[in-house]
Length: 211
Image 1 (tube, rainbow, N blue to C red):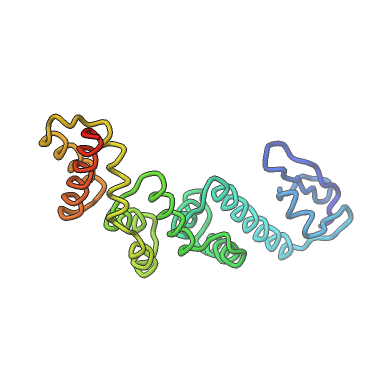
Image 2: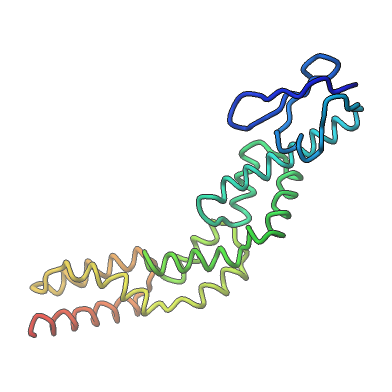
């Protein structure tokens, strides 16, 4: 069958309508048609059309992954789940993931560090809770174990509680301790770290009041 025209399709995906022997036959992404050098007068066999469909599916899958990664870094498991939700089959999704990893756009170790650093900067929490979050992102256990070992829980607990402590009255120690303990507990810190942090902040606030 002969390509008799290549017509620009409608919509944001920038597709091209391939007409064979004067009739619309199928659509491809414009970038697929360009990469494969399709042109009017070219003959296409059934096998060639199947191959084009496969290449186009792979490109659409890759484009979907690019869009998903544009917002923030993602784990490999997150990207794979997204692609499957978008209707791509496992083999196509896995091929796209392999290409993304080759380009350094998916790296679970780098993602784990990004997540830890982000939490430490904006919402400090314990090693345990950070590990729980990373497991939910589908990261391997060895990657999680390696990154959470870097967390200084004493520092994180102090920074997490210091702002909250500044808003609590010094007239009631039980209230001060209860509020901060609950706050730190919800961030996954254990009893020892909580007690040390509360005592440290109470002492600091008390010295500031006296001064």
